Image: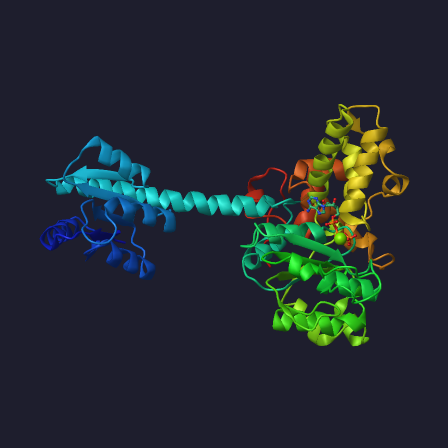
Length: 469
Ligand SMILES: Nc1ncnc2c1ncn2[C@@H]1O[C@H](COP(=O)(O)OP(=O)(O)OP(=O)(O)O)[C@@H](O)[C@H]1O
Ligand SMILES: [Mg+2]
């Protein structure tokens, strides 16, 4: 595809000449006169490179145009044409964000070469920013750690909804990181410089919660000695995090609904309403849909809060994230206690992977902090782990929580092998060691489960592919 160039020049004849010369050299060229026309055109279509004359008359001059373009379209390279060629101008232009400059009279071959390099630079810049986004997104999201498929899916969802000003409902078992997600959403939103105000809806009786959320005026009740703005007002321009929203008393639910719909609150005892500008993120570990069925939660409010639903997977479904998180908590705890503890023994790691973590990340964190405090060696051993974690032997993580689901033995084996393999990042030698089987046996099992990739065919231990399907 021909690279697209936008040429900005007030000299119509020169513009036309540049256009002819560049087309001749394989570029697709559009010309405009004046900086304003250029900026207007950029909003409709982005070229691969912009060429502008430094002596633009009327509107912002070339350097000013450079500055604006660099700010709005950081990936678009700019090449300047100048009659002076003085070093000061060149420096000013580069400072303003230009890629390069060339002097009149124009050598079109040199111009074309510069443009080609600029186009390559643009492709490179885009690739870098794409890679940076994916790397960030696959490994972590703000303070959320984890590389499992389940967590990457969460990051993708958070990335899509963070900047939109819509209500988000976070659900997940206790300790899965709901509060951390709420903070991450705020941090990634356009409101990040505004306040993040959190309230636990289960912690206060109804009347107090009402005055906390919506505020009160002096004299509204016995203890109301002065006006007090509510959290909705305190969170102005930011995010209000309603934790344990499933516990919100029924009597307050219509008031919250009104605040969300009308974007106004009325403090307790007040006659006038106040406008609010907040984004509401809420979290719960109860099944809100069931609560709606049982008439403990209003359906209309549920819809308002649940515009986007972010379900957090339990830790036992996050494979090797357990070890990643354990290592992080271990380093933090060791630094805090000023102890030299570097890692986990293989056997301890195995137990952590096998355990079902009903208390999720918080339980893991407590477990590791305790182990770091207890251990006398440089790596955490099985004996440093709590009794219940120690006793977990080889029960597949996905089964533990279901407590008593009856699966055939071969299915238990299949799930266990696959989860160990995932936890070890697909490393078959390590998985075989952890499972206590030789590599050939592991390969045979994986072939049975059709869990071998085409690369595996090159491995001497891999069984011959089945002849028919
Ligand atoms: N993905 C993660 N990466 C790093 N730390 C995490 C992650 N998820 C949770 N944590 C940590 O685990 C602890 C529990 O997280 P958090 O308080 O957000 O859970 P929660 O879902 O709100 O729990 P609860 O339902 O009990 O309120 C916190 O210390 C948090 O920092
Ligand atoms: Mg919480």
